[in-house]
Length: 240
Ligand code: ADP
Image (cartoon, rainbow, N blue to C red):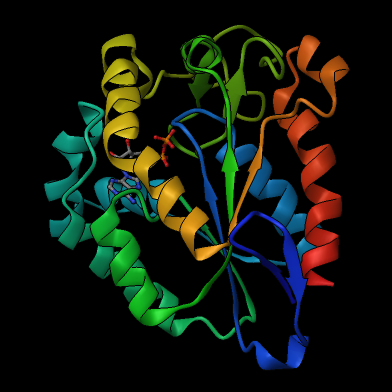
């Protein structure tokens, strides 16, 4: 198993010592966590838990947790720690897969400490994406509310503007992708989640990716591809 040392270097110990490898994917809102998670699931067979997806499902179903979370999410605020911790940890406990990818959790110190009591985090991946790019990306992101299919006008536009490719139904912008909410989400990220990078750095498991190893792709506005080009070999090395 790959462990990153305090100075960010890697040390090896046998895979058999590790029962379950928990990998985190962190990064600013709209920074490509969803896109990169999809690639990781496909290539490495992760059991994926996305807190944004879990919460949106609860909101859609109108459950008590969903009703509680809705207003926070629409205004771009983080939902209360106890709500999300209960939701995620109960899922994590049920998983039998040896590879778990947590996408969007933890986002606060309280969440990170709660997770530590249940699972050992092996790798904390941080996607480092500049704020200007986030604002541009989120404003071009549209979804089909029925299926959750996502389109980005700059790199995977729908065949017909404003319409879902499969159903022809209208696309909408997520409330939390509207400009005021994006600003609030970036602020929350800076205040609550950025400090977690030091938390994982001190534990020796932080690994940051910004795509700069593949400047050609970044220049073509394909930062997620640029990041994945470095992340994939790193994961191959760490997961075996
Ligand atoms: P993004 O990363 O683009 O913000 P997500 O789909 O991960 O989108 O999350 C959508 C919203 O769900 C967040 O803005 C926040 O309100 C809520 N949320 C998701 N994960 C957490 C978490 N770990 N703690 C608190 N709120 C969360």
